[in-house]
Image (tube, rainbow, N blue to C red; front, side):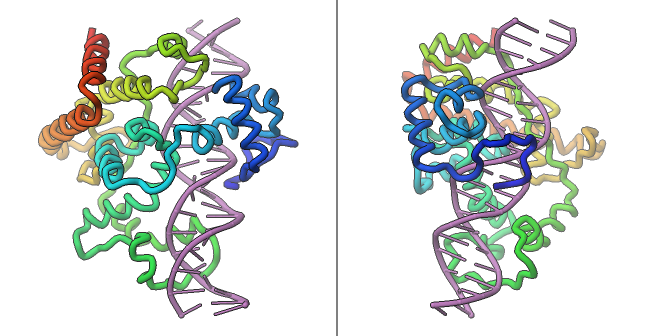
Length: 287
DNA sequence: AACACTCTCAACCGCAACTGA
DNA sequence: CTCAGTTGCGGTTGAGAGTGT
């Protein structure tokens, strides 16, 4: 699937996984744990690249994965978090136990982005979603090319975006501190290298770290954030036009409000016991 | 039933970040 | 400090399922 391979992995399987491959991968990971993705396929007897194995495990085979309908609460959380931190799917997924970044990303792209867009445009612009699939009018389409078709169907939206001239920043990974993976692993008693994402506690700590290191008051992220919010900040090649600076002060205030709201969200979402744990963890990072 | 078209989501890719020598 | 190998992330793609005519 997708575009042409970046490197010729001759002899390696691609495309959809077979039940047999799934079984091999699951069996191997249950016996040896996650990690060592590069060498895993060979050891597990799979003709796949390590990357593919990791993806399959993380997005589909992991036992703690929750599949199926996304609840309205999850829905709401995704929207709110996206408004705060943008397309940082793994971070958002960290707040939704059992959900994967890929699933959330897909869900956003197919459902929520349209809904949010429609809400921003007002009640006259209803989203074209599954809900109204049955009422949907068909459009004439010249040829089958998904990506092009999508851009055709979104022509108006694209033009709208051009008018506002918003330059979306590329999502960046930010970190206040570096905590070695090994340290984290040893804390968790995990035998895996890598993210150790199976531990909810670790996810929350990492999440907390990312939130704190997000620094909404920081130059880079604050403008990136508001650009994503669709507000009138013009940013070209990292420079900010002078006329926007006054606006920014106001926007910083609303950003702070949103940031507080997000922190509140975090608090609501976890138990008191966990909260205490996180508080002390947070304190330790502010040294 | 057959066709045309749209939508979903699993899987791919490139690249950035991380790690250890 | 540098560099090579590995891992993780976000963007993109297209096969297949779903729906309307």
